[in-house]
Image 1 (cartoon, rainbow, N blue to C red):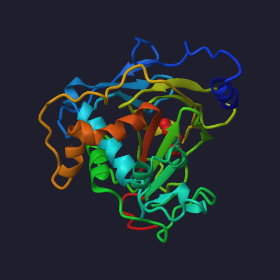
Image 2: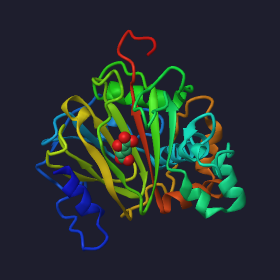
Image 3: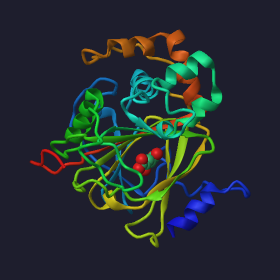
Length: 307
Ligand SMILES: O=C(O)CCC(=O)C(=O)O
């Protein structure tokens, strides 16, 4: 049962055996290689070099083993920490009295060196804000969806042959070494046919995915920095969660390779941070003890203009 596996991997009171966790760094019959279109895009290695798999026991669950250049990883970390964590995006810290007035969380953390505040940001929502209580999206609770995140998911959708994609809601999850995310299904979107794109940066997650019922057994897998998980088809409505964060066994964000970056116009200031070790330091420090997950969904059905 999902619950039992979750409890097992979460446990700190016993030695946990990770040998059954699906690992992209090891050959396993549980992964089936799939072919994709040949393309290039900012922040990624050319797609003909990517390793893309479907999890055999979960049809529709696709995993791309870190296709990012090191600068690409840095780019998204900077966006998540510096920009997607700001107002007008909606964050967990908005509903807590002591932090509700903070517009620019990242700047305040860096100016004050407040480590407690750094740990307080757990999520931010972009585009249609997910209401955690009602589990509904609404036109009244919506901000503009970032163009760069929109474009990268359109690119992935095309490369993986999913066709047109419109990213309309995203949750940015910020995890610390002791954070977990309970088992749940993502079923609030009227469009449940469009894939969900999930990007991991920083420390490694033990990710758990069950079936459509809570009673179904779960598969565990490591999600390392740069890995992209796509929940499509039959896997789109499966129970999933993160019982544990573990130390990363490599830090691909640490050094930068000097390859040509075809940066989209308007984001040069982000690239400047990525390429300047001094400006980058605080972002790298965060990734050394945290994990960031960008979880992107299409909300509306094709031809639907609003909710
Ligand atoms: O952090 C992850 O890998 C999963 C996040 C997730 O399931 C969610 O935001 O709904």
